Structure formats: C-alpha cells, structure tokens
Amino acid sequence: MTLVEKGLPWTSHHLDLKLKENISDAYFGINPNGLVPTLIDNGVVHIESNDIIDYLDETYPEPSLRAAGNEDGMLEWLRLAASIHVPAVKPYVYATKMQKKLKKTAEEQKKYDELQKNVELKSFHAKHAGGSEFGEKDIARAHEILEECFTKLENALRDCNWIMGDRFTLADISWIPLHFVLYGCGYPFENYPSISRWAAAFQDKESYRDGILKWCPDFSKV
Image (tube, rainbow, N blue to C red; front, side, top):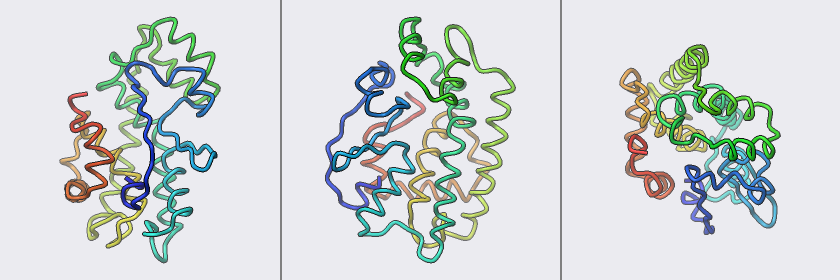
C-alpha cells in the first residue's frame, strides 16, 4: 500500500506460506525471522512491516504519509500494531482459521526449529506443533488485547476520517491489514461502528485494491 501511495516501482517475489515456501535456508538467509514481508532496497534488507513503511516514507518523502505536527503519535500507532501481532493477532487467526491449513509435517517442523532463532516466534509455533492447539488461556489473552486495542482505535476514529485526524498516514496503512485479516476470521467489528466506517473508506483507494484485494479478495475464504 505504501509503495502504491508513493508511486514507487518495485519487483514483487511472492511466497506461498501454505506451501511453507518461507521455511528455507535461502529465505531465512534474507529474513532471519522467516516472515513476510521483506524489502530489499539498494542492497539493504529491511524486515517488519511497520519498519518497512516508515523507512519508505523517510527515504522517499513525497508524497508524505506522516502526520504533520504529531509524528510521535503516528509512530506510536505503528509500534502498537507491531506489538500485538504475536501475542494477539496470530493466535486469533491461527485458532479460528489457519491452524490446520498451516500445520507442519514433522520434517517441516524440524526444519523450522533449526532455522528460527527468534524466541517469541519459536514459542508461538511450538504451541500448535504436531497435534497441539492453542489453549483457552492463549485465546482469552488474544481477545483481551484485541478488545483493548480496537476500543482505543474506535475512540481515535470517532470524530475523524483517519487515525491521525483528517490526514491519511502510515498509521492507517499499519492497521487496515489487521482489520482485513481479523474481519475475515469473524472478529466482531459490528461492535465498533467508527472502525467499520473507516474500513469502508478504504474500498475506494487504489493502494488498498492493489496492496490487499489483488492478493486476497476475501480472507474469510482463505
């Protein structure tokens, strides 16, 4: 979405996570967490979605996607989006939809354990290794975190078009994919009318169509 908003050309290399194409020596050699996305710009590797979009906006500043006069507040929204990924978003998505579809064979699990050095990610994937499933405690904690965060987002959007006010920024780009995926998993966004209005406004944006819908028109059917 950030690349489209800025009109930047790029070459895309798609990895099919269902086929475990990210679990390879080659990919872990690029991204030590084995996650997508990864950006390589001028020979330098950048990982983590929110760090990537912040880098792009700083390196290619026109048109700006920053919040004029409140950059710290915008960056805090990026940090919050990143912080809930493993403890809340991933458990919710895996438990409701992806756990069985992304189940690893014993060989794949062994390969992943050998490659993965990130303790948080290793612990997460160990919880659904083999025939294991996420426990009630993990799911309850995920619900608790998501409710707290989306209540905060609902309040921020109550009288505004975008998270930072009337200006579309990186904060919006960091949160709309979370909404898209969780909505596809049945998260009850009907409880958040301002978020639902905000999400509907993305339908008219070229960056949303090219950055999200082009790859996954409906996450509920994944």
